[in-house]
Image (cartoon, rainbow, N blue to C red; front, side, top):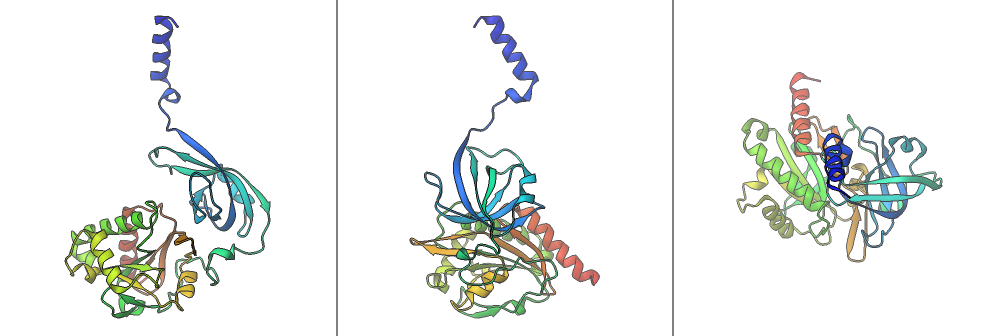
Length: 299
């Protein structure tokens, strides 16, 4: 290649963005079962099978490309396709998604194998939240009813979760919300953070307390005034998970699960629900303000 050709190619790549560096991507064959579909976010919650060389079996949310494929899917369908994983995320886009998705078998109901025995419910704004009870990091019994009058932001983790994009990521984001609330005393007075464990056999009050200090990067007990860590009774977990759209399945010493985060308004009703971990801190801060504003205006 002569010098003139090199200069010409460099000029073309300067003028045309398509020549710029694109993150490398890997493809893996994928199979799983559709649990639910979110047309607004162009994604689906899928109980995926083991992906050799990438990830163990796990229920999680996937963006579907092209989005038109979603219209061909229904809860309970068995599917196959390719999971595409970029080595680095591009701004505004997830670093993984599903392509070439096709239905291999139609189902009549959502994949029940991962729900641990409770009927699945998709939280919808306006739904009354039952007065579920828990044991918190201090060993005290608490219930959702005691937070009436406040906006409650609730999410689910288990403290031993080893997957960076799951529980650790959610807890890191909640820590950032806690920090931002600390800079806004008015908002903090009307907002409660609640992290719930779905591993009651392991996550004792002491473990939850230590976990809270760890993720919040503090040992100040005042942390728990605005951010509680709690766990339900074993017998209550299925109905709590079922209400909040949480799917979990213990296997091989790990728990495969999806992510479920909800904003409960001061009136005790669902204000917003996020399936997956693609929400941002600013999203939940905005939702909390909106829920509080709705109470103030009497809506």
